[in-house]
Image (tube, rainbow, N blue to C red; front, side, top):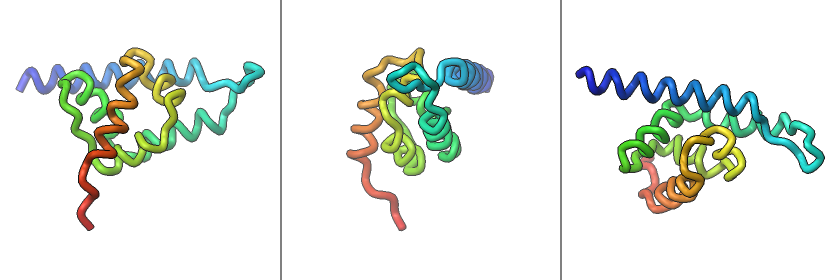
Length: 110
């Protein structure tokens, strides 16, 4: 039980750190001007999928990718720039791995 609580706290701290980093380093256009629409779009896609950020961190640290269909939809819609903005501490190759895992997942049951 203590391990699960410690893992949850670690994930929460990482989520907060990435959120602060993302807000401090928003996406910029070629001229160095902040592109607020891209930054907001990235944020909205990830936040809209409940539990997605936690799923991403859990997948990274456990080595087993387990994402909800809603999280897969969010991941498929975000660009590599968005991923790097929100998860600067994770390996950049992890986003393509998540996308490939989502593409290989069976379609959700209706």
